[in-house]
Amino acid sequence: LKPKRTPLPPGTKLPPGPPGLPFLGNLLSLPLSHSWLHFRALTDHYGPLVRLTIAGQNHLLLGRESIANDLLRERGTIYSDRYLAPAATQLLCDGEFMLFLPYGEKWRRERRFMHQLTMSSVAAGYRPEQRIEAVRMVRDILRTPGDYQAILERLSVGLGMRLLYGQRLENGHDEDCRRILGIVHELERVGSPGNYFVDVFPWMMGLPDWMAPWKRYLKEKRVKDEEFFTGLVERTRRDMQAGKDVRSFARTWLETREKWGLSEREAAWMFGSVFDAAATSTSSLMMSFVLAMVRNPEWFRRLQEEMDGVVGPDRLPTYDDLPQLPLLRACIKETFRFYPVTGGGFPHKSTQDDVYQGYFIEKGTIVHPVQWAIHRDPELYPDPDTFNPRRWLDAKYPTYREPLTVYPNLQSFSGFGHGRRLCQGMNIAEASASLQVAYLAWGTNIGRKKDGQGREIIPPEYDFSVGFNVAPNRFEFDLHERSKDRTEVIEREYQKSLAEDPLLS
Ligand code: HEM
Image 1 (cartoon, helix red, strand yellow):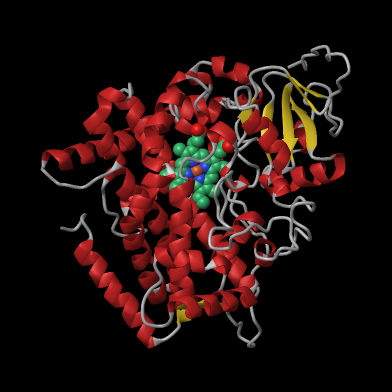
Image 2 (tube, protein in one colour):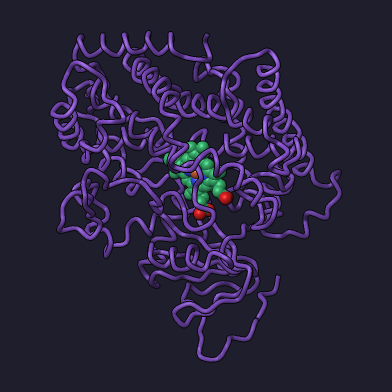
């Protein structure tokens, strides 16, 4: 427990940070949820590099994008490891969860396999699947707007099922959907700091199971999760054996497995981890988009004007329209900035002593690119607490880039992380979100609900779920069709998509 006292190299100092207690360090000052709000207050106060110690473990908060890129990207050889919190990574996932894999050979093998299926040139090939799921979303949300959370979850999970396993998801309430969402939420709960003492006091891993019921629970849960992940790959295998001609990531692996050096179990966990990473993240972004539009209705109106000018009333927007829709892309990017899905950033761990800007960063430090702070850096984002898509479209802002047929886009945006562990689903997520927002703007009116006295209900700015990937808690809003004709176009496109869906033929 005693903080290690590595002597500082000459001419260096430790990054600044709040004083801590003996042994516990800053542990007691950490909030149990939404720690990034507290972290931003610290980076505002101490500057963009803040050092914390938690029960002897060094942590470094990064509050500026350029610093996150300097360390996590430019010095990626020494800042790409992960912190192995015992409860989540070892007990619940047995060291198999891809996002938690140490920076080493196994991670490289899995990353290489995933790269051939997610790099931008290949990701563009998933548009038919993205279209099928997005048409269904807009059709369903018009019919039952009150069910918007399950519809958006089904959309994210459904796309994951399709791409990863070649399986169709019927609806957001069905068993596969609830099962993967349950796995995601439980991993979030177990992995959140403060929920398991063993994460702070790793010696507790040595306790026998009979003295530690939490160990038994986590191991049993892992066995069930693993059965689910293995069963999904098994379904793909059975479909192949039955002669179904449906592409999927799992099928690619089954057909070329000798090239990748991954065992059956490793592959099942790799797909399960990616499913987990994809299952809620895009739907979180979409829920945040709706929230941002309800709170800032003038931007939704402008977005619809842009859409109507480019697409008109007679057809749904397509991917080919996106270069002509810079405001649409700006609204998505501003939503992602304002409401980062991973507010605290996904931590990396350093594997060597380092010196940066005169500060000593000890080997084994857990480095947090705090997205909430990075996305509210006033130098890069003037007036950072205002939702303002114009910052991506007007040359007077530092984030403006030309040409507007290409920018703004989400390529390597800090919301997807940094360096060698950058999100591999970035291209897929960007394409999904763009089409989904385009369909919503084209086919629906989103606005504020009125209460019994006719007053508009404005949802709170930040009432979000707990965990490391977060989404707005359920909020009130109004969603209805833009016109009967547009709804008919959507219904027609939906029927067409059913006829074209390879999973239904
Ligand atoms: C809006 C949607 C998404 C967001 C906000 C998001 C965010 C992130 C973040 C912050 C990381 C950690 C990066 C780092 O450590 O520096 C990550 C990693 C990852 N994401 Fe995503 N993600 C999204 C969608 C997806 C999708 C759709 C997939 C799969 C198709 C995916 C697959 C992955 C994988 C495989 C990693 C692991 C990288 C590694 O540890 O090497 N993500 N994502």
